[in-house]
Image 1 (cartoon, rainbow, N blue to C red):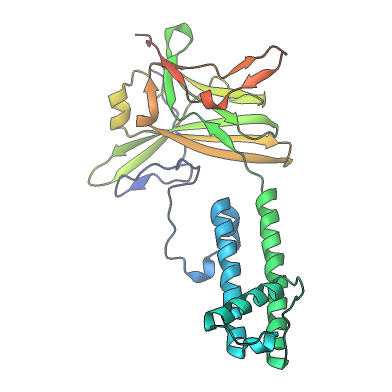
Image 2: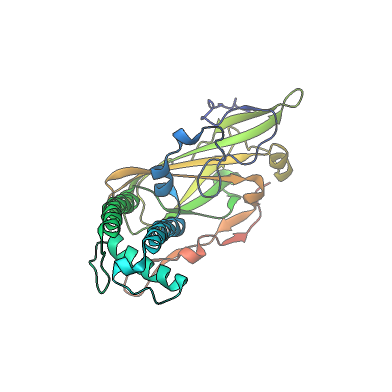
Length: 313
C-alpha cells in the first residue's frame, strides 16, 4: 500500500490529555470555549453580528424596553404632573403614562397630549433624546452589518455514505447544495480525515490526513455537488471496516470555498462527519429533474434521501 501523506496540524491541535468531542460543530463553528479573557476583551459588536436573528431581535427589544423602563422610573419620580398628566391614577398607571412618554421621547416621534413641564423633566427628556439618536444609529449599523456580511448558506447531506465507485472499488461521498438564490462560482473543496490515537499514558493524539477527491473544483454551482473520495490503495480508508473507523474515532473535516456574485466576495463553509454519521452501502437518490417546460427543478427535501446497495467485495 502506498504511503499516506499526513497533513500538518490545521490549527486545531494534535495532543490532548483527554479525548475531545468533535472538532467542528454541526453549525460550522469550532468546538472551542474561550475562558479567562476578562471583560476588556469581549467584543459586543461581533457577538451581536454573529448571533442568530431571533436572539438578536430579542436582545434589541429587551434593551429598548429596559432603557425606556429606567427613564419611565425617573419621570415617575419627578411626577407625571410634569408630563402634562394629572396624578389621579394609581402608581402603576403613572408609570405606564411615563413609559409611553419615554418611548415618544426616545424615538423622537414628537409629543401628543404629553409634554415635559419644568426644567428637571426637560433635562431628562433631552438626555433621553440624545441617547435615542445614538442607540438607533448603532442598531441601524448592526442591522446593515448583519445584512451585508458575506456568508455561505450550504445544505449538507445529514449522512455521508460509503458507496460504489469505478473499477469495483468503494468511495466516501457527501453532497451539498446552495440554499440561497445567489450564484456561487469557482467552488473548491478541501477534506481532511482526523484519526485519534491513544498514546502512552493518558494522552490522545490527533493525526490529519488529506483525502484526495475525484473533483476538487467546479466552475459553477447551480445544482448539487456530490463530493467523492475514491477508496483505493492510497486512501487511509482502504480496507477499513465500520468498527475500525469507530475505534479510530474519525472525523471528516470539510472546508468549502467559493465566490458569491451577490456579495462579490469569497465565502466559506465548514462541516464534519463522525463515524456514526456515515452510512455503509448506500447511494444518494436523484434530487432534480426537468419539468414539461424544460426547466430544472431542484428538490431540497430530497437532499438527505438515499437507498441501500451492496458494496464491492
